[in-house]
Image (cartoon, rainbow, N blue to C red; front, side, top):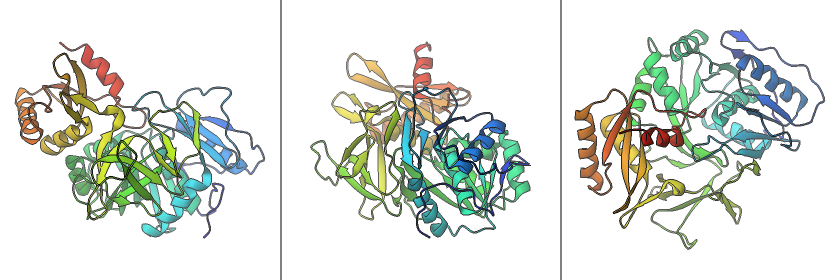
Length: 409
């Protein structure tokens, strides 16, 4: 099937809000840009279906959008997660997502009998993507964002859903809340962040019949790589079909070491309709959003971190994300690592772990990090909080966490 240029609601697809089926909106002709509420879902889902019925461009947001925001026909806007600052409105063509709908249909053998469960709000591009993909391809979609994790698990089981789209945080909460295995799921698609080993193990136990795939990408690029059971631990996998990667050094030359990740594909965005980012740059049809990584001999991509988060400690350039992954793998906890100013070394790192305070665990984390990366780079101190602050995307709100740290003794 050739790539279409408009989202459609396939005749065979149904959309459910919890247990209630959402009726189809009548066909109409209102092609002006539509700013839509992302919440509550009882308003957001009918508004989205009305935009689809009218073939109108749209944007779903948790907050009021500027009155002068626009989007051309055949396009739509999504919002970035805001992990590195204020959310930006990403402008893209509907065909850029439709192209990957067809790739996924072939790659994962999607069929009419499949049904998709979606755990996140429509303001998060992963959740919006999952709903639109299901409706476009003719699959039932079950929107469960406003349910508790326990209710989400029960509704997945009740519906017999076969495909689950979720972030690592949503999967972790679902595994904690579920009363038993979700045996109907045959495919779990995870995006929006790194999947730590403890959450991966919990998902494998929760979904014993499901293949687990983790996507790496960004709102601006859509899919970049895809990881599966054969992907080495710590890697985000090989390029998603249709994606070309370049790794360039500071001089803009190809490198076999750690370099800036540049992407070319049919899935790229068209620019920002609101906000901007100095890290986002175009060159020769490739785009970078300021993330760094390296490729191994088998073509697997290993992420170092965002250039924006990179800090200098004495004479070393350090990515906090590397330390976060180390802590998550060693201690099986959700965590964040942040820099603090240091008069002697420029910066030092501290860790923040989700859970009950434990001096023994803090000492073990520091010792493990010192053994792996040395005393200079290892976190100097570990703090504990009952819950890490999250953005609507499910990512950790680093700005809120930094403000919280300032208030700690």
